[in-house]
Image 1: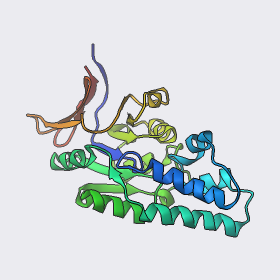
Image 2: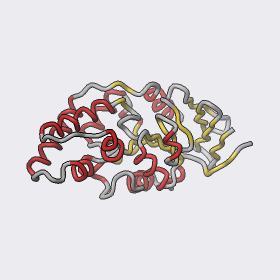
Image 3: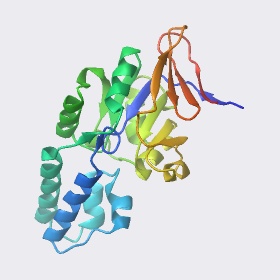
Length: 241
């Protein structure tokens, strides 16, 4: 039996944990910063206040007792570590982005990261020319888990957020995408489904872009999920088979 929701016309990617495997680097950076001031970062802190959250939120939540100068030093340390670290791409992501672009499907990046890192990552992946829209940390007053980043990306693409497919790896990111009305796919564990993701996959190696005779394309997941992307004609549908 199939269930249907409105079609998709663009695909939006979070960056950390979705384009690149950066979790270990991010966790190390924040733990190093905490150690400089005699603090400890807990596993719950990482889930609630680090992954998927902009730096100002993390500093407010975990370092607010420090003087402003020290909070600025914390932020500078995080930026330095993340801008100089080496990252591995999430398996299959480069191939998926280039396939979407070849099929004339708009691709965007919506992240709590900053532009310097975004440019470095897209250059590393070789997908700069494939990206139609970027929403970064300073583009919105309220970052994830609020819907604002994905609503802004949809506005810049001149389409409703409900016409987008989003890939997210964090609870706050999934909440943001779902609250905006997007069809969200979790990258990681099944717990992301409990946050509102329609399905969860480990990486992009099982995702394919398949041309259709009507000029559109289908993005297929394993197992049994197909997203029909409207690229050249009337809106289609998202189906689970």
